[in-house]
Length: 377
Ligand code: B12
Image 1 (cartoon, rainbow, N blue to C red):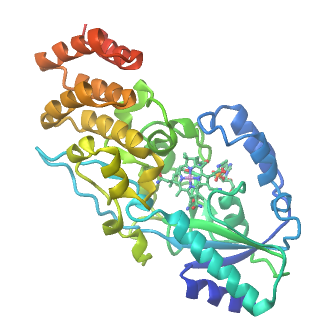
Image 2 (cartoon, protein in one colour):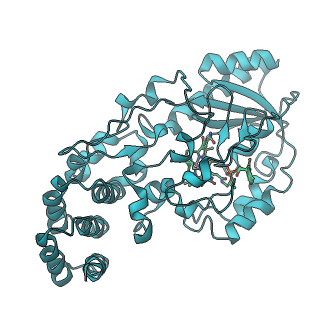
């Protein structure tokens, strides 16, 4: 039965299919509670005590479950970034987000997988597929099933795909022998956590999500803390630094679904200046069905302003000035004002910032401009 289920999973497109028991995850609730209490998830209000409790035992969610089927799906592993050139500043997008949004894609695959299980093994009550958004810890399930091991960057690493893979699970009431966890560890290697540009790892294997560039550029709906903006560099959606520096990931060449190809979405390194002037309608038309919809236009443009300040190409000065004058969203104007401050050697910027302090209707934008002026002295 295991071989047959593996074959079904692979025929649907999953790269890895393994099995885990539904025993409670001993210690997980306490570990999650401690991290919540430490404030490491304070920007994610849905990451709460109730979630920690539910995640500690999948039978809280599916009481009849007897087996967990852990699924892994590759996304683009190879570095395809085009560097910025003078006159053409570019931003970087995390690998998983180059093409279509994986949620509907993987959900559809999980549904087909469950339908096929029903077809082969009869109708069972407890068949639920989870793709990312369920209140379970995907990496804990994948680790137990031996799909891979957890790195010091908290990512699940595999022998065949590195950590360039997405995780999903199906809970079933079929009784299936679990696969053993792997014995592999990262050993002494600790390249990932010190490489983080925002120092988001207070200890190896522990992430302060609030400092992670992935959180700052995707999940956060508010200002990117001023002290972290320079460290965000040119990342405009997610970040892969802790994965890129990992020796296990180096040289991984894997096939992935055409949906995840760079041509299907924003791609790895879009030009920044044209993004600054996207209307809401243009944004939706261009990025519907892609991960970028999660930040919305406002979040993406906030990130674009920060990246322009960090890339430091003076070609951005005039467009940023136009943004502080004409953009409707204060969050975007505020980050454009900050970005202008990164070109502060030009006198014209100082006058602009003084004008923003006097005239901008929004207090956040005025504060940003006055902070930059204060720093200029
Ligand atoms: C919240 C969340 C985030 C948050 C917080 C991430 C985090 N590390 O907790 C933010 C927004 C920052 C984020 C970022 C990213 N995410 Co995310 N995220 C999630 C989500 C929804 C919940 C994660 C969670 O429960 N975190 C709580 C912590 C404690 O759990 P954990 O780190 O996953 O748990 C394991 C390890 O920490 C380990 N552990 C605990 N203590 C210790 C101590 C030591 C010493 C060691 C070695 C290990 C270890 O044990 C835990 C269980 O195995 C999951 C989906 C899901 N439902 O699980 C996706 C998920 C983890 N994300 C995913 C991805 C792809 C990313 C990004 C790579 C996206 C990007 N490129 O920008 C980054 C990676 C950042 C990073 N280094 O983790 C994938 C990961 C796939 C993989 N191969 O690991 C998941 C599984 C989504 C999916 N279904 O595929 N994410």
